[in-house]
Image 1 (cartoon, rainbow, N blue to C red):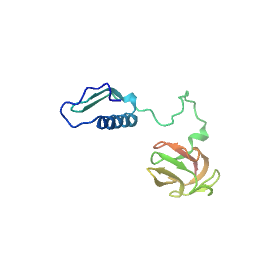
Image 2 (tube, one colour):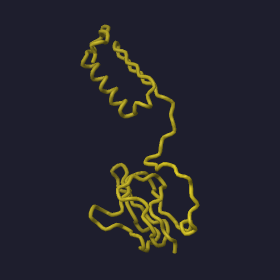
Image 3 (cartoon, rainbow, N blue to C red):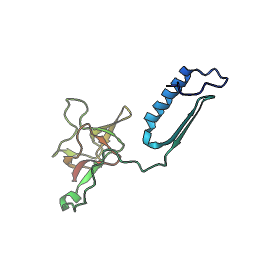
Image 4 (tube, helix red, strand yellow):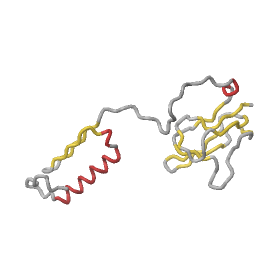
Length: 158
């Protein structure tokens, strides 16, 4: 890897040190993504590493479905309330594998009642009903990644 580079000028910097630095740079490139780096410069003696990032592009939302033309929703849908995700994470409908879901369509829920869990950064966060009513539909699949304020459950208010 370092065969084509000039010899170090008077430092105790070895080829093994350079290989280690190059591996570190590779790790950084993997983390930030090659698309975001517009220029990478690595001088060998005395070592200098320069990374120039491309101008930021708007971030694409996680798992966003293709955009479809917006259709007028039936009056019934407009009368529903929704329980939204309080944070980004993985949504679970039940307290654990093999356990019954917190809520199912047709079930009555009270404001403040737990209706799901969102796992974020290895922490389990309760999802609570924001209003009382009847569960009409669970809008996400168990184990799906959800976005902040994404509709999780449709509720017909009492």
